[in-house]
Length: 73
Image 1 (tube, rainbow, N blue to C red):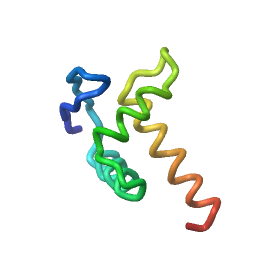
Image 2: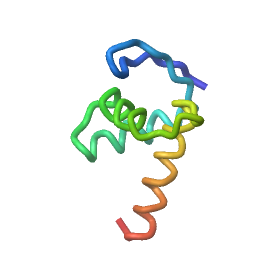
Image 3: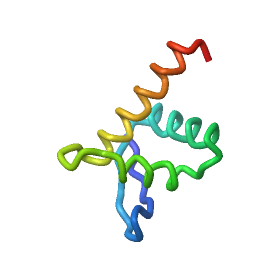
Image 4: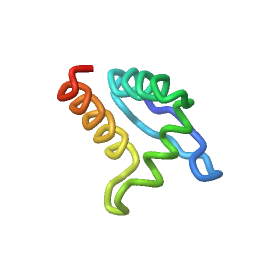
């Protein structure tokens, strides 16, 4: 588990994720031409209020890789 600080919506917050999720969010951000903090900010804006940010990031990674698997890419 690795904790990193990022700025989301103008304030600093820390997110704890396992190393494979940090790798995944970095890959997803690169594919979309975003920085990791920018992608995390997008995820934060779209997450339900009852889902914490770390869980939302994990779920985003899972959904992204699932979609890639379905589309063959």
